[in-house]
Length: 203
Image (cartoon, rainbow, N blue to C red; front, side, top):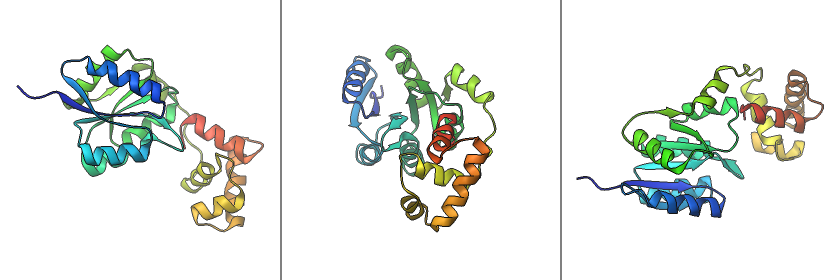
């Protein structure tokens, strides 16, 4: 008989992570071998612990779990289940592109989550039905890759100079991209445009 499925658990909320780890440990065929509070910690933990599967929270400031998911799946070949509190439509497409095999809301009962972990570990894919339905009705993104890049950098209140440095563009070019993005999204400010793009799951 093979051993239990070894799980990496990543969530920036300590209380939530601890409670989930304790509940998953009650499942006879699951064991939590590593915990992380950020995407960077999750990548490091996956590299050292080499779990059978990674369970990642989507919202882990300052970034999100998608970057970690892409690294953990792409570099290490470990399947990833993504858990999210806010199932924004465009995120599912980005998650699937990052190699995520499971996508579920945080409201999922732990007993059901355990079943999904087993399914994904066994090679299947699981996407919550409501999230999938929302993704099917999402609006097409009108923004270019560069416009998305500058909005992503602008989201947390960065100045034009800081955005320019982050995306390696001249400040004037950054202003042009931001102005175009604002016009496309009918947003009065770059922060409003960034928030709108984030809410759609485009950034």
